[in-house]
Image (cartoon, rainbow, N blue to C red; front, side):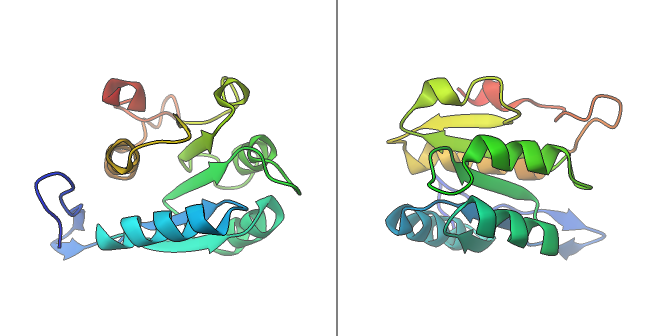
Amino acid sequence: MGNALFPVPKTFIHGVRIMRNILVIDDERVISDVLQQALTIYGYNVETASGGSDGLRMFEAGSFDLVITDIRMPDIDGIEVARCIRSSDKPQTPIIAMSGTPWLMNGNGFDFTISKPFSIKILMDAVKELTVNPMNPDTGHLNNTPEKLQ
């Protein structure tokens, strides 16, 4: 299913392939749909939420390996989504922020930030890095930071 540019992620535990679960939160349906299609093609299970409130409800009820969120949304914005995730019982969940206003993303608890418009390759590299590399239990951060992708 993958190709040389976007290989299908292969995460195995005791010989069993593990599908990674990703939550995409964006009030722009077209963006959510494109991300869902691209991530699904490359082997991820994807659920989408149309805003921050829906996204936080889904996050609390589900089990996600990664959250991708827009910053500017009409109900709860992506910065508040990140704050809620970081104060939840799953604070180590990696978060990718995406926005047309990149200055709003700095220093707000995100593991990786992407300015809109962005290439799918950059997103897929970040997703792969954040879903494959384990967290360092001493620091609570990824052993390989996404900044190395840029």
